[in-house]
Length: 379
Ligand SMILES: NC(=O)c1ccc[n+]([C@@H]2O[C@H](COP(=O)([O-])OP(=O)(O)OC[C@H]3O[C@@H](n4cnc5c(N)ncnc54)[C@H](OP(=O)(O)O)[C@@H]3O)[C@@H](O)[C@H]2O)c1
Image (cartoon, rainbow, N blue to C red; front, side, top):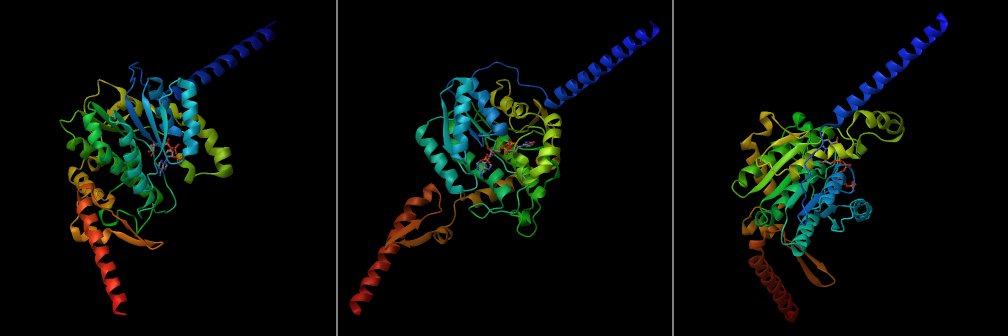
């Protein structure tokens, strides 16, 4: 009888311990996921662009905004992956206003083409979410010769945002959301070697690009004062996505990091919550903030250094070709080539400079063909 009582009490103790551990693990997991955006506001008919949203945080952001009635332009580099994600979002939300558009932030030409096509299709833009990103890549250059992480995470988005600014202004009140990262804490803007030509560190270049996201947010917010465009950035948390593809792979990923991250990291849905809040929360009126888990967070002084923010803005304008150049510089930037006997002229100039330059170039071409004719006649 006594033995039976002992067994029962051991059994009850074991069950209690198991339940307590399970409850504790559940609570820790809940804390890791962070708070979710709870307001039920809809955005029916509002036009949204989300970059890099075929997977990860961007896809979950697109899904949530689609559920709430947004007209979503999915700006992705791979049209096939984008189409799969688009069809999944349509199936889950029954919102047919989801579009697959190609944007490769690795190429300024692709950014310009995307922006032009979008502006031909739509006369308004309510929400722009600069989400796409690459992390810790091997040293690689973009199509325009920029270090990949700086080029994609900062410069591509810098150009895209600037090309869409007039439309965002016309559509105000509108929003810009920039997905940065807490890794900025370890970053610095290397004025002397922005492109990491002298020295490349995978993580250092990522941290620099994410600090650039913060400084861009600050400077943009300042320049947009009084326009009724709200611009903020966020850190999504440590999220289980494909972002670490250049860091871990193979069996180590399969047997070590995947099982650990499935418990210790946020889900992509949880990681999307800061972007969703910044895009949707109508009570959010302030600009220039850095958010984590639904809260505005303080930042280190390097992320609010307005002198550096201005310098980075101006340098970025030069690098992406937005800053007016002198005629001489522009002519140097022209690429003239000969294809099947036809002269092809590629111009890397701003819109205002375009016309006089085309005229100038045509005159040059005419002059040289006149000279060639005269030479031939002499012969
Ligand atoms: N995951 C985290 O723990 C974490 C933490 C802090 C910040 N973040 C930031 O959150 C954002 C989203 O990352 P994620 O975690 O969701 O990563 P992800 O799953 O790797 O998604 C990144 C997205 O960006 C796209 N992309 C990459 N290069 C591009 C290019 N050249 N042009 C256009 N799109 C491009 C990817 O397209 P493909 O599928 O075609 O490659 C993908 O859709 C990034 O800005 C990242 O820095 C993430």
